[in-house]
Structures are given as structure tokens and as C-alpha cells.
Image 1 (cartoon, rainbow, N blue to C red):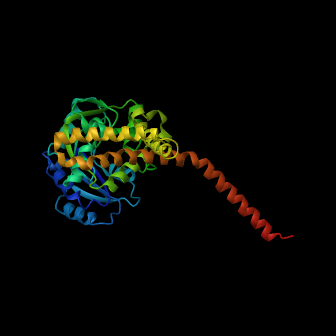
Image 2 (image 1 turned 135 degrees about the vertical axis):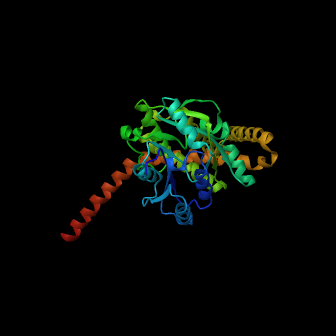
Image 3 (image 1 turned 180 degrees about the vertical axis):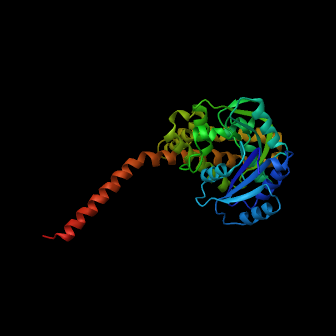
Length: 348
């Protein structure tokens, strides 16, 4: 069967959201015989495969593949290689796309000279705490100037989420880097732009995204982002922008200030106090617009976003800088073992 669009959904342990994701893809206003949905499961430990298989059995344009490596980049590449269409759309298991999503993606690929297009993401959740997390992830103070999260202005951008790609891109610049555990899309988009490719953003392409629902999950997510950015930095130093260094610098200054406050002088408490004040101002602004019930949750949410990313980035840098030392130690231990073996086999 010939398709015009192939949708790739790389997932793992998404039993809570995957059904909504698939229902939204099944409800597209684009002709069903003209698009396929390839779900690539990374050996989920929950009921995700059962849900997906059940859905595929009643929808002939849906199918499921297996990703034994579990890494998102590998899942994407498996899906892309199996895809039959000339347009590849990535959608994550946490996402619920609008009914005209595929139609709009194809329209803007045809209208623009872009190699890929992306749209506006509305971050959502069902609980009060989860909604506070979603609101912070849609704010400038929370995530910076990521246009696909906070802006409604059309134009060319550096990156995005849930994009539609022209198939020939992957023939031209290769696939997603499977050595990266996170930020594989940012690295791919940098390679795309470095080869003259362009990414077009429009708010007319819309989707919803379920954010993490707890502080712990959110912190872990952004810690991985920070760690992933360093892995990308190793490959493409020029890719990094000044704003991406703000959280790790902030965390470093914050920790240093607290230590100086404890052991040197109370005056050093000024900087942590300044950060907390900024968080409170941002929390008040968001709560005033969306509801005061979110105020109590927003301060810890901002801390999870900033400190999770910052500590992840710092951990990645430390791991990177200590790698030569680790290599030297391994070499030393290897030589020591050989020496000890010689001493054992040739006693005096």
C-alpha cells in the first residue's frame, strides 16, 4: 500500500496516555488510506504493548514494531526505515494532536521551502500540581524562549517538537544519533541547519502534550535534558546558545552562595534570595492569569526545571572532564594487574 504520510510514535511505558495519542491520530481529517502510523515500542514493562496491539488490530493503517535497545533515537530510526511515505511525522506517546494536524503539516510543507515544519504545543495535565507544571513549561521564566511552547508567531526556528520532515532529509544528512540518550532531536536539527536546511514554525499546527505530574518525574526529565545537552555539546560546540548555559551557571552560583553564607558571611544569601524572589514574581504572574490555586506549586516547579537541567548539565561536564582521568586510572590498574601477575608467576 502507498502512503503520503508516515507517522512515527517512539514509546516506552506509556500506558497512561498512549490510547489518547492513538485515538487522536486515528481521528485525523486526512484520508485514512493516505497515511500510516508506526508505533515503535521500547520493550515497555507496563500494558503499553497490549493497548497498542489492540488498537492496531482494528485499524489497518496502524502497526507496531519493537525497539530492543529502548533508546528513543533508535526507535525513531527503526520507524523511519520502515516508513513507506515521503513525509515523516514524529509524534510522542504523551501527545494528543488536533484533528487537522497531518493536513496542516502537509499544507505548510507544500507552501514553504522548509525541510520540516512544526507547530505550537499546549502543555496540559489533569491535577492541580500537574497543571502548575504544565503552566510553568509554557512560560518564558520556566523554559526560556522556546517558540513552539510559548509563541504564536510564524517563522523559521532552530528546533521544534512533533515535526513533519521531508523524507529526503534523512538521505541527505543521516538519521538520529543513537549514541544520544536525550536531545537527539536538537542534535539532528543542528545538523539539518548546518547543511542549509530550514525548520518552519506555525501556530496553526497544534497539539497538546501531557507534562510530568510530579516534582520527581519533572526533575528527572530535566536532569536528563541537561545531561543530554552536554553530550550534544561534545559533538557540536557551536550549537550551544548562551541561554542554555543560564541554568547550570545559576545552579553553580546558588550552591556557592549557600556555602559562602554558611561558612563566610550572611551577605552571600543575597543571590539565592534574589532567585527565589524572581520565582515568586513569576509564580504570582502565572497564578494571577490562570488561578491562585497554582501559586503554592509553582515555586518548587521552577526549582525542578532550573535545578534539574542545571545539575544534569554540570554532571555531564564533570563526567566529560573526568573521563581522561578515568581512562588514565583504568590504564594504571591494568598495568598494575599485569605487574602483580608477573610478581605472582615469577617469585624471587
